[in-house]
Image 1 (cartoon, rainbow, N blue to C red):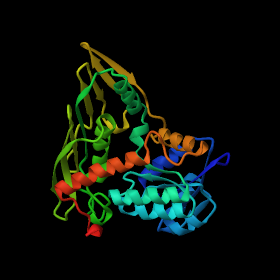
Image 2 (cartoon, rainbow, N blue to C red):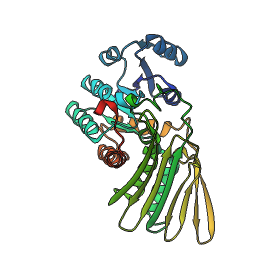
Image 3 (tube, helix red, strand yellow):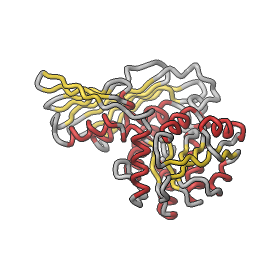
Length: 327
């Protein structure tokens, strides 16, 4: 890699704004370009963040020599095609979660990444959060014994959004499951692995969008109770219990700045603040991989992304979540 890693941004919305602000905290970064289907939107973003190149279509960015790695922050249904086009042009890719809307999409992405020998990672930023990393280490070290119960939720009120929004438009792979349900599912998978059985139930908007999903993961000696929804707020906290103690991840747990360990009638608070907007830790992992010639992360590998989307596929099959473009 060159001395400075050149990033290109696709999908200059709110998430990309926060991500770009965190990129600007790095000395070894050059934000070379931004692309949108609207040149005006791309130019506005470029002006705000002093990015030299703005493109009114994605192909221009892929063909240009203004970026080494592309960050994709579009609605879910565009992830696969844009990531493939980027990789076919020799670009590395960090793609916002979910990497694809189904296992078949993720398999295709990994195949293309390996064929072109480029880096590919799903942007599941919580995996790199200092609190989540510390919690995983404590559990792996046996601090709370064998985990037998996990609970995590993620919900906000989204029914006041327009039906053309990414939250409620089925053509954009809308609903709570891919947008926010992926976080509780990820935590259960990270701590307990793949379950033996899954039970799941969903409620739907009149336009077919899934707006509430409750899930139980059944393991040989543990259960995980998970929830995502767009119909109300939730506490957005997480609890992980073992025979020796409990870990409580403070709200909002997926972007935690700390957690508590309760053990032997004592509680210890851990303060582990996120840097920047929270994307710094993910970006640092990407940079480490690029500088050492890795095509995937050890912390969130291609197999991890495959496992995660496979769980979501099984939940969707049980609950009947189907997007119009899949019919």
